[in-house]
Length: 240
Image (cartoon, rainbow, N blue to C red; front, side, top):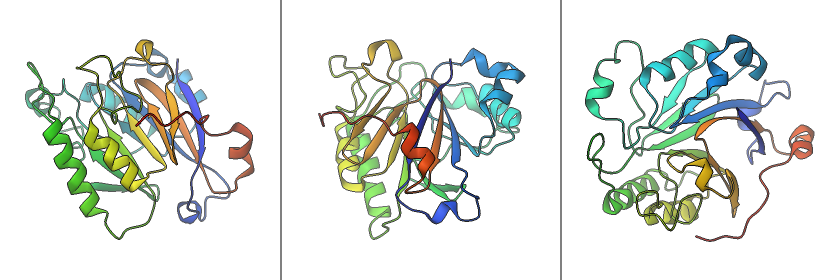
């Protein structure tokens, strides 16, 4: 089942010349949403401006979604995404966003944090690698006040992760980065929905979204009536 969420963006700049329409993202990760394989379901989902992937989905499926919605694709790699797995699809699937680089689509800045450690069989998590990513992105964004979206495979520590499980625990470096950059939207995967109390939570000014499966996210201009009616994610205590 494809989930839906609406949030309000703090900057009106990306919404110029959109006639009041929101920017619509399709966020996917880890598990295929069977509904999106049906053309009728894709039509019912409505137009999509950008598809964002948070790891551990085949390049074939990502390319299928990009073609089916006729939308650009921006994604990061997860722990199961080995280099060999992706080498064969280079001809028809764009490269993953380079870690800590910033991509621009639909007027939005999108930063990527790929799995910070060895990927593929025998994948290893790396707290040091996550800290390195966080520091490099913080330096890259220094003096740039415009809001941005952060894509990561693993969430920040204490924000949408599984604190009791080592493998699905978030990274402390990402928590520091979230507090420093305060992105309005952070999208991740990796955490099984069945193990998460909520699939979207609020940490300060950041809406955290677990994209495992698929989520349509509507981003509305500041002060938009439609966004205020549907509402952003409900605030939750900051556990970071």
